[in-house]
Length: 258
Image (cartoon, rainbow, N blue to C red; front, side, top):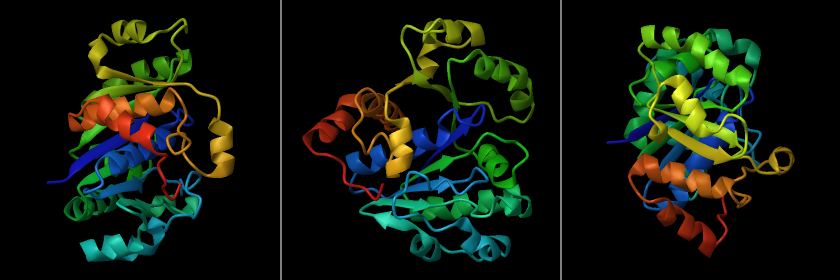
């Protein structure tokens, strides 16, 4: 049975795409016998870290609407490097209103039959059909946020809505984390009245802008700190240790399509 991991951002530009795609890369590298799929379900193309580009979900729209998409057809439309596959999001953002939540649900159903791990970038909006469909799906949800007051306050304001929708996250990802920030993870956990163990910290590293220019993730760049934290997060998702993921990373640089 496939495992699903949906990453949802509390706001735009908290690094949801970078985190989700890096986790997919880490899973594919550590588990070469498994097929890993990255899905962009955030209402945008989200191919900024894919050097060769990625097929847009637009090519499958009619098949999704008619519920005729099959596993082999989905695989054929994905960009592939070794055991890592990727399907980009909506190429023309003006067309996002034409996608309903049911399309995301059906796509995830098909993906689960074709891949061992499905990692989805669920964006940050509740008024986007694909993003909302991903959030509603029965999967492991992770909320991506930062230590900024605006991000923390936004979650506090929106938490009740997520509770009513029954889409609360399984855990939180504090991205661009700075240990000496005035809002450390312990403080955020107390503020949210959550257990500290539910917060995964992904350190801030230099090179984010260069990653966009070079069209590759910080994981592919072997960025110190970031790669270690992504390894820890991927290990937590699969029940393996962070060292198991990091050891392979140290032995050789990951050669992906990123």
